[in-house]
Image (tube, rainbow, N blue to C red; front, side, top):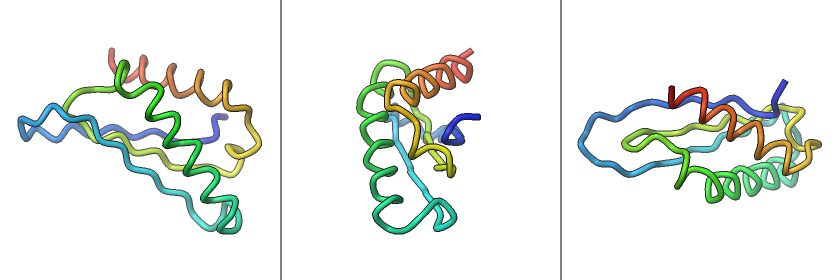
Length: 88
């Protein structure tokens, strides 16, 4: 099970911008843990959304409890696979 849930919602407003939203609940951990997870998600967005994101859509990453222990490379692969699956 990946350390996140990815939701993608088309805006249909004519703007081709790719936007990223991040949410991590208190169930994941304290503020330090949640902020570290949000920083990792922002880095994932910078790495992959420009090339694999869906234009004109909002991408929402919801952090899960197992995500903070995952290696960044594993998270990157999972995020890339999720974006490929959604782009079909």
